[in-house]
Length: 514
Ligand code: PHE
Image (tube, rainbow, N blue to C red):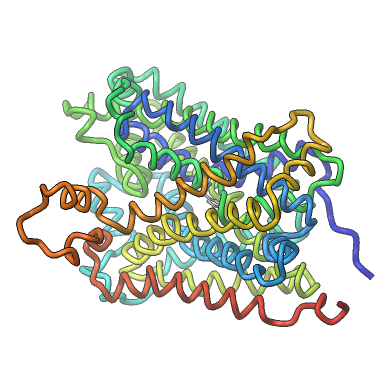
């Protein structure tokens, strides 16, 4: 007999969990920088267009698909057609591999939480991070042993993940009641602290001064879509799994709107925290804001500690608050990725939740050890690039095609309209069938192919006599050696694809009963 599917205790808890997954490190260290770099205030236009034409429609799609099929990604795609089950597994596996390194970043945060107590990073925060903490080796092939404290931090992160999802939506519901409001309150404290520092206004004017010309550049638009996909946790099967636990009469569309708008709002707010303090840093060092801006780990672990050093009023407290904020931001994104895999496996094999959780968490933890080594940051960088640029876009594209054309976008639309206050119209079908897939395909091609070079050659402006083979593709990412790009990039994607095919061909409990 089929056990009744667990459901969220309330719609509010579901929305909190979805917001928890969406709002992560990306909001703080990716959005503000992307906004600054691609047009400042003007970037908000493509960002909102991307949110409306791709973010919200895909969120409705993922919630709606999970809700309709009452299944996480693998079984949801299997319900469309048996032969597409692998798409669900590919999404889930890509997400789990994102988690292998997301956990390591959280491991660094744990270490920095301890360092913040006495601001152990000193004045050379850069040397401290790369040499002291990461013990970064000279090249990607020079791996060395795992760095003990990072490994311990990674272990702590996995412990947190394991216990957060131990009872599925029931335990997730309890955890997100803390891990969503706490970082938002801390972020608000940083905004208030930030804007009251000298130099803050300079920083903010870097962040928001609109460069309207940027709107003419297609790259800016692609960046906006990329930011929206990653930031909303779309394309890893997470939101399908979460949607599958919604009670049957839930208002999917409303929840999708709230989740997306909350995430966008927090992105925007994080920009104030980041750029006001960057303005302060530039002010104290007598530099231009452009010289101090950073994104990613460099912002969180090098620049921010430097700013904390310069605060006069209880800097240690701000240090602790900052890393606590990153940890609470990250943990609910982290366990959502794992839950997508756990829920998918339970759907397929009906196994006991604790064992599935333990096996998946252990395996992903073990893979993560690679990034705790001395070459870890290089591997993390490559894997992140390929998974978030290609993996995510491929899954998103497949999702749109399978739901839009094979299953029928109208069926999902009718399904969600049946229980939703806001009725979605045919515009949604258009977004799913045309706008989003075209953009995703373009994203993949623009990453892969040297679009500007090709255009120049076609227009007869290219370098004299350069053969097509040299012009066609973009140079390999960040100049890492070809073997490493193969292993951590294309090889990994291929391995995930093959693994997805194998898993989907393994017999499930449903085959037995069918
Ligand atoms: N959305 C998260 C962030 O902004 C990252 C994430 C992506 C989490 C995909 C889960 C799934 O950091």
